[in-house]
Every structure is written in structure tokens, then in C-alpha cells.
Amino acid sequence: MSREPGRPDAVLDVLGVGFGPSNLALALAIQEHNERVPASARVAASFVEQQAAFGWHRGMLLPGATMQVSFLKDLVTMRDPTSPRSFLNYLQGQGRLADFINTKTMFPSRVEFHDYLEWCAADVRHLVSYGTRAVSVEPVPGPDGAVDQLDVVLRDAQGDGTRVVRTRNLILATGLVPWLPPGVQRCERVWHNSELLFRLADLAPAPPRSRRYVVVGAGQSAAEATAHLHDREDAAAVHSVFSRYGYSPADDTSFANRIFDPEAVDHFYAAPGEVKQMLMDYHANTNYSVVDPELIGDLYTRAYQEKVAGTQRLHVHGASRVAGVPEVSDPLAPDLALALDVEFLPTGQVHTISADIVVYATGYRPIDPSGLLGDVGAWCRRAEDGELLVERDYRLHTVHPLRAGIYLQGPTEHTHGISSTLLSTTAVRAAEILDSVLGHHRSGPDLTVAHDEVGEPATLGSGWGDPGVITE
Image 1 (cartoon, rainbow, N blue to C red):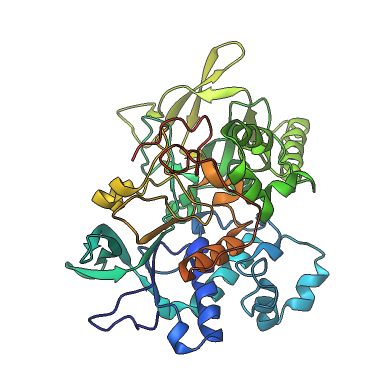
Image 2: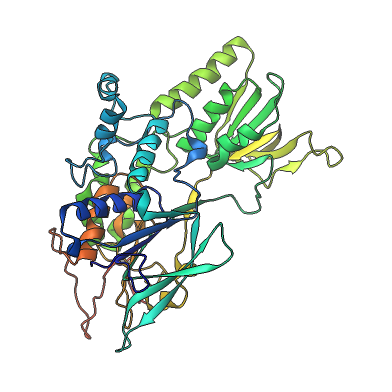
């Protein structure tokens, strides 16, 4: 693994596509590995990111918003508590370590944690090509027909042409994409919450208490957006619409948080499909469509105090849904208002809300890597439900002739559990992937599976239900 990228005959050991926290954590693990070993044992790695610079949910870096995960679950500490790239070492370098300790919190502000991520990204800047998008993946057959290397076609934002990078291992961490209900289209006045701060900055100035906002969604991001908009001087009214009767509190109690422990990934991976589903059902309230109790209390207090004062601006529409797509209330005056039909689910009664801005905090969906993998994807095995089969070390389960490694960071909930898209196990996952690339065998529970008559694993990487027929 001593070849250096940049030479005409160079072959990378690792090419990472996407450079959010997951691949950033991997880059840090590789950097620290290379700092410890002789040149002949170093990993030749490179990463590409289509954004022009590092950024992680910049549109939701709201003032006062805090992390929902401990600072100890940063990009390195769970992998190596002595790493110089820890959040605590970042604080020391900023001259704020004592000040942070005096806050008596485990949960830094989202703005500060993002600054930590940028600090880490700057440390491995030499490994990353920003403004670069992976276009396709092509196999590189060897003399025996086996595919031990892949050619990845890249396109730079600043150029019209493409270039090709050859690698032995491809790490896909392409993140999630904002999701909107069917028929809803983003426009100047209909947004996804991921772009909230950018859109607000682009709004023309308005008189105090002149704009009407609607937020659709029941999770943490929806509640944060509701509070932030309610604080705005131009907000005449803020309507929160969701199908639950009220915001549901996030379960962050100590025993429940064990679902985010590294060993819980081992347990989940080895569990039968019905147990996987049971665990996801039991513990969805640790992450999905739930809100910090303190924020729930804050929003309720705001609404109640406004009722007492007789000047209500915050309106919470529980057990309700937006029926249809926001429409301009007056086609002859498109700038006047958007009309939203809101249905109260217990009775079916519908009333109309007039709004100037509608924000959908309706979550994200994983990106299917098949579009990027192209023909190479045909050698990646899938379960009968269509989910990709993923090994315990996050490597896709592939068939002959593909022997190059393809690893997946993110959309692996069906095999690795609820922490797959969260920060909780990011540092540990990076170490496991690097160990796999290096050919190491990690210690852990016996995950041996039964073999069928032809010697192939019968349930390897099975999804949520009966593994049944595995398609190639």
C-alpha cells in the first residue's frame, strides 16, 4: 500500500465518495494510521465531495440549538481516546476548555460542534477534492477476469471534462437527501427545513408581525424551526402541523441509549429479522419524530402564555395533516398568500390556513448507490426485499468476479441498526472499515451463520424479515 496518488500508475487503496462526518472520521483514522506506520505500510487515500467546502446541515445551525449526542461521541474518541483530533483537544486549541467544562453540559451547541468538524476537516484537507462529483464506477478486470480494482469517473465543478481515479476500495458515504410529500415542490415560498437559514437570509425585509409561517412535521427539526420562526420579529403567526396529538419526547434515558453502543451493532447484526424489526419498533422513539422534552415544554409555555395574553401567534395543530399541496390563494395576486387545507384527523374536519411561507420538516431518505455503481452493482447481492446485503465490516456482499471492496456508510439500518446514520458509532465504524481495508480481523462475538447445501451463507447480512431468496 505504498503507492502515492498522483502518479500515472498510482492505484489508491481507498477512495471515499462524500465527505460528511462519516468519511471525515475515516479520513482521520487513515491519517492517524499513516502517522504511526512506515511509508511502505501507509494507506493511499483520497476523498471527493461535491460541495465547494465542508458543511454539515448548515441550513439548520440555529442559534441556541444543541447536539442530541454527547461530545464524547465525536469523530475519534470512541475509536481512540488519546487522539489529538478529539472535541476536547479542539476546545483546548480554541482556549475554551475550562469555559466549556463550566457549562456542565455533555451537549455542545450545534454551531460549536460544526466548528469542530470544520477544524477536523482542515486537518485532512490534503486528502479531499471539494467541488468534485463521482459520475460512475467501472470494473477493471485482471488477467484472470477477477475485478480487484475499480475506475471511478469524477467530474469537477470547475471543469467540463472528467477524470478517472483507480482504487482497490470504494467507500460510499453519500448521505441523505431531503424528502417532501408527493406532489410538493420546493419554490420561493415552500422550503425543506434543510435550507431554512439560507432561505430566511434571502427574504426581503418585512414589517414586524407581518409574515405567516407554517411548519409541517413532528420531529426535533420541526420543533426547532417552529421556535426559531416564532422568535422572528416579522412573524405574525407560526402554525405547526403534525399527525401526532402532540410532540413526542425523545427517549434519551441511560438504558435506552444502549441501542447506540458499539456492541449493540454486533447484537443487531446477528439477530434474526423479526428481532431486528422488534428492536427498531421499540426504540424508534430514541431518534425518529421525537423532540427534546425541554423544547416541548418551551413551545407549550409560549402557546399558553399567548393564550393568557389574548394575542396568540403560535398555533399547534396536533392530530392533523396538510391535505394536498399548498396553492396560491389568489391566482391573480400570487404574492398574497398560500392556502393550506389542514385536516383534523379524528373528525375529518378541514380548515384552511393562509401562509406566506411553508417549511416542510419531513425528514430525509437514503441515496441508493445503484445509480453510481452501474454494472458493478449487478455483482452486489441483495435480499428478496431488495436491500443490499452488507457484511459486519460495512462491506457490500459481492459475488464473482468482483473482489474490490465496496463499503457503505449510512444506509445500513436494515443490517446494522438505528445508529447507522447517526454520530454515535461513527468513530468506531471508521476503525472497523479501516481494519477491513487493512485485512485485519476484528474481535467480537461469534457471528457465524448456517451454510446451505452449496456452502454459501444462508442468512448473511439478512434484512428485516425472513431472508428468504437472495437475489444477485
